[in-house]
Length: 114
Image 1 (tube, rainbow, N blue to C red):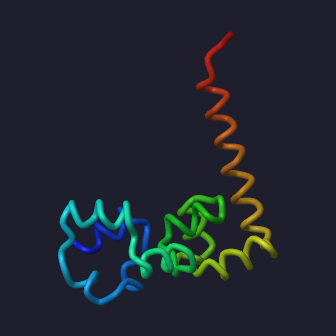
Image 2 (cartoon, rainbow, N blue to C red):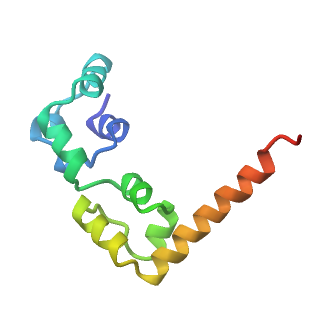
């Protein structure tokens, strides 16, 4: 598979990976090995970032759309994410609340009746 596809499956930001990963195709066996026994560079990248949009959104507890709408549509490091969470701007609080409320509404609609 293409390095971009492998990076997406691993939840990592491709430009931050080693050159060898970026330039060579990844087999399904290699991907499985990376998932089961990640090398130090992969562990470090997952720990400190930079993280791709889906991971940033998940760590912030918001949607990718909320990231884009607030011009934060770029990779962030773990430290940058922690700083945003520690001193949340109003848009982040609102986006987190909206997502939580949306999840609650979905849970209520899909809950089986007693």
